[in-house]
Image 1 (cartoon, rainbow, N blue to C red):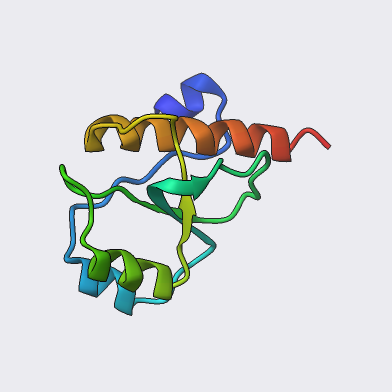
Image 2 (cartoon, helix red, strand yellow; image 1 turned 90 degrees about the vertical axis):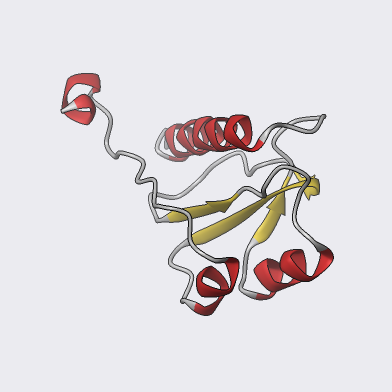
Length: 107
């Protein structure tokens, strides 16, 4: 109903937390972002394809976990110039995705 009311073309789907190994083992549909302070800024535009975002736990991912996610095809994306709490990172990632999708549909 909220998508209909707002006129949005899509709605975010938030899944229950799953073990990182399970996430890395399944095929990545569309794009994958790893919220990472060492990453690049989110892309300016984003296609209307699935986007999966991994935000780490408080304290961040271990080196092994980070390598596993990157090995599964995720791209490190810096969401802010400073460290965010995991719940804030998820909201910022959703906002970056919406902005990128809107810019991607302008042309």
